[in-house]
Image 1: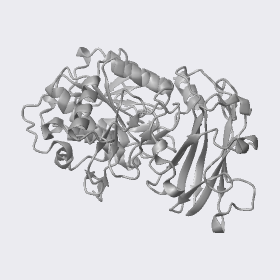
Image 2 (image 1 turned 90 degrees about the vertical axis):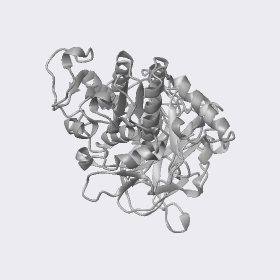
Image 3 (image 1 turned 60 degrees about the vertical axis):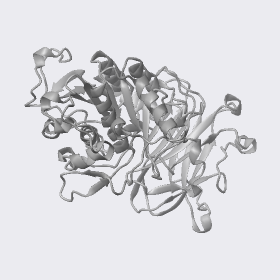
Image 4 (image 1 turned 45 degrees about the vertical axis):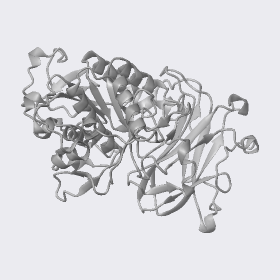
Length: 492
């Protein structure tokens, strides 16, 4: 437990949920329009002959507090693998035979444990529950008796330590399909590598079909080379496309909580590696006429010192890091224009022509900020592990928020797209309003994962490579477009 907490403090993986923020009250929400969700990809499918009882699926997400209520929506073949305690916890009332399952650890079970406390900066405690429901609804599973449904594992992840335990659990339990509808701002070199992707690749090598959301970073990401204008670097500033070496963005809403992440390509597969390449980031208000305010002080900074190793304790981690990223957090911005500057802090000779950096704007209000002029959209908005070549990455066709682009090694992502009008198709939950929640990339990944679950039920030997082979066939059938539309096999 102490090791997990220390890793969280020192490494603090920051997730961008690839979906709409359901909020804390979403814990009790139940998907109401399951038939509508199933018909998005599987309309006309005869579900009567389907049997998922031999299959295992996993929903990997931020946390599952109050999970004992989920059995009302998902059925009783439901377990939570607590990555902190390494105990599999069975929801009260579950029909699962504890004695017959090798994944039930010895010792006292804790059925009502709140799986990982939710810090204040995580808005979407109900996100994983929603994704589990959408995936199950997209298949035929919810139309069948519980005995014919798959085993469902809910697995919370918060840090490298919990990801490592999660992947080992997937392999040990021979889980068939893992749905990961969240994305990580950093930890990759924009090429599908880095320490989190190393773990994900371990899962896919061991037979897990991993489905990931593309992320909702469309129009809020800037990605470019360090060496663009050498004169700027000599002055200690990284070249950015707007006036005064800045990246400008518009914030459309008042009281908008914003997080800004700067990351660059100096991660390794070894979690213990530390970079000494050092960049800092600062945020400024923009005055009338698009000019920076005359006040020189920035309104937000990310200025840790990259020390070539990981911080040794929480106190050192306040000011120093070995990770190639900086963040400005806790911002509450009012409507208007803002500008970002990036500063070169380590010696220019530390950098090479191969070095790149990325800036991501993350808001608690979807589509509330936008980089001006939607600059260099195709130079990659894809964050890990969606950039991993072995995962099935899913986006929403035509949606401005859906991340897209090429990885550093020139692979096009997402692998497949959901082609629906997100305003007309979506989910309705049992909250008071029951308003339609439009489809985003989280939902798209869950819908495709449900479709793949159907494929796996029809062909127990379906592998990760088989899924990619099917995507290549779709590409040929669709005339070899750059972007492939996902179609369930029954729809062709």
